[in-house]
Length: 447
Ligand SMILES: Nc1ncnc2c1ncn2[C@@H]1O[C@H](COP(=O)(O)OP(=O)(O)OP(=O)(O)O)[C@@H](O)[C@H]1O
Ligand SMILES: [Mg+2]
Image (cartoon, rainbow, N blue to C red; front, side, top):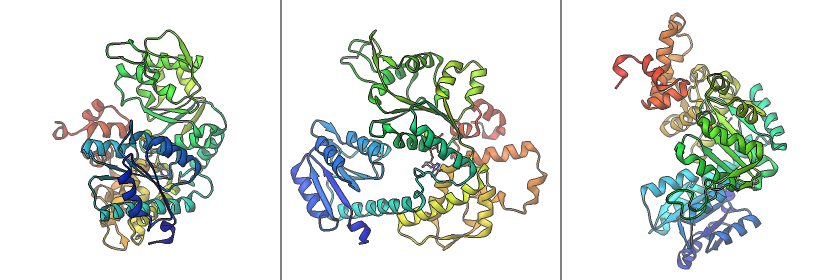
């Protein structure tokens, strides 16, 4: 085993003493430190005292869910890996756990060999992540890769934004790194040890949003048997991230404006305000100014949210970043998979450079993973790229002789191919609504 990996440390959290002991005995010979604790409180205390590369937790802990610990680790120690073991394996459980940041999921009962392989696979991933981070992140760029002029400017805004509690509004197409930048600001600010609470405004139904954000008191509505804190109370002292803010209803906008102005929130069903100290960072892939003009977004709220503005240009406008990101992801995934890093032929690079990247960095990230997984050769050639990219080979003169509507049509089909035929997602990437998308599709594409 690689020396780097054998010097790594593991914390095991399980309320069953025999499982703790079993895991410890299996892993202790391979890693420098393997400590065990029975519950979340003990785990958090230890995590605050020393660095662990990996936390292994049971899903069901006495009186608590392992997912609470997962959230704590994700928010506070983002380089620490998390593995979950559980006796109640369900697909939904696994999906929830993976969404929360669990990287490996091992259902009970497992054999010693399964335990050891799963842990060592994850450790390889964690150690390559650290190695890469040291290479590319050395100049304190918060894990954000980019040397284009636009990104340099963004780094300096992040720096300034971290020093103040001012609200920040981030705009950029899908997959440009809005959430990554938000986290960088939070974890670089004085608030870094308080919670970072991300909320996707479109993921919560309108009628629940108010009570989710501000909490509710007992008896506020049928079913409110006890009082419950909302995201704003949870984020007290920290940062709340309002993603897709452009989708928020006018009614909720009014309530949010009041929170920003008064720095206090009213729980649903209560007339007594409570003071909260929360920094708000919001993000959108819409032009909020246009929504303001159309009366869909409150102008006063827009100015309150937009004290510091970060506009991330689409990847196609940052050619230097394309090349840097390609080498970054190739290196990272090759290390993670334990394979030799392939090289990329010149004509492949030309295609990647002129391709418009509708899904931005996320699309490039996915493509690099796919190329490495599928790759059988040590050189990546144009033939390895997905079909819709090949039209960008240089010298294809016919590109110059097309009408705008041809180009629009082709671009739409490429985006649809990218989203696997999902029209809502395609409309979102293209920055148009579903109806407009339908009107642009040839009839055979409309169900
Ligand atoms: N400059 C960058 N360097 C490294 N990774 C990046 C960069 N920008 C984006 N990514 C990666 O691309 C993916 C998408 O980023 P992120 O989720 O922050 O985008 P987003 O703008 O919030 O997208 P969406 O609008 O779809 O929510 C993530 O995996 C992120 O780590
Ligand atoms: Mg996002």
